[in-house]
Image 1 (cartoon, one colour):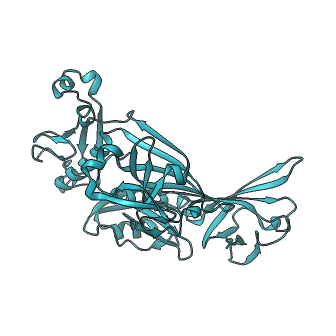
Image 2 (cartoon, one colour):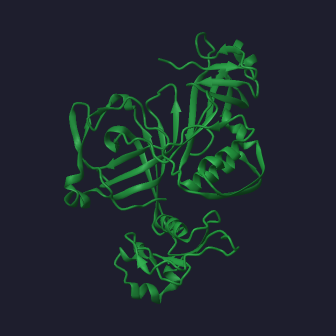
Image 3 (cartoon, one colour):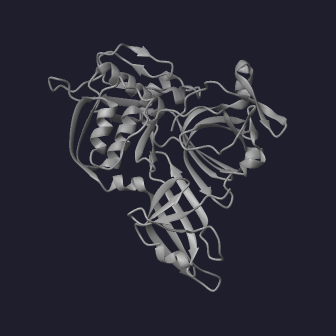
Length: 402
């Protein structure tokens, strides 16, 4: 069933349905969803459309139960066609135009922070069931946009947000339910681009926290001497973390690495002013370092029509992947399996199940062939149509986050 594209004025009066009938209806409707960003809606409409008079900036377009402000119109005239391309931003974009003049919260809960940011905005906190409510952090700002502060909270609590314009709620999640979606190049994709990058790799990370009760900068110097499971080393009395695992895994010895800082020493300072407990600072610094000490892997994929292959892992794929969800990407030719978080999706109404997906924040990455032997107890069957398309690993592999 085709989704209805409606337009309203700012008082909520319905003006027209833009894509229901006629020769000059709105078409080429596209939505761009991005993680912790403002969704964008675009569509084309003929200059001859009788509904064009309603398409003025700041009027509201409703599509798939969400509202969007019209904020850009481009007229293109040629011998072949005369169209207007209209670009809209989700109504949550108003939060990027509202500011928090001053917030000074010390040792505040997640809810206290969000409530302070959204005060007098017309928006309020929605669901946050998966957020750690036992964490207490600082939030200090002057003359920053509410949207920017919400993003800072997401970074602090390692979560992402979704906006619901029907209720004017901001919902927060750390994870979405895992539907075990397997995307295989041969059957589900038109193309896949993998980018491996070590430009931002860090091997030595200096760590600084916020000020404690007596005004001293919190450090990790009192943390024990140890090497964790990711190969991150800390020495008691030092304010930094070290990890050369990326190079050690290539067979380079620690002695050679130590003797050649001109090749292997990549330093960076991490300042987390909202952390005033040394143990919590240390734990978060190791999480950050686990993402910085390895090659980043980013992926963009172009989907085929998912509706042709509705079965996956014994279930029915009723919808395409959504932003924030984890998916598994299989490539037989590259002999690789990647588990990653979807951070962007482009939808087109003319082929709603054929989408473009942007993926980063790689969760798991490893050669498929080398893992099949060691991880046979973690293998699942993935189905396409009525036949088994292959056996794939569903287990924890090496962390390789961008």
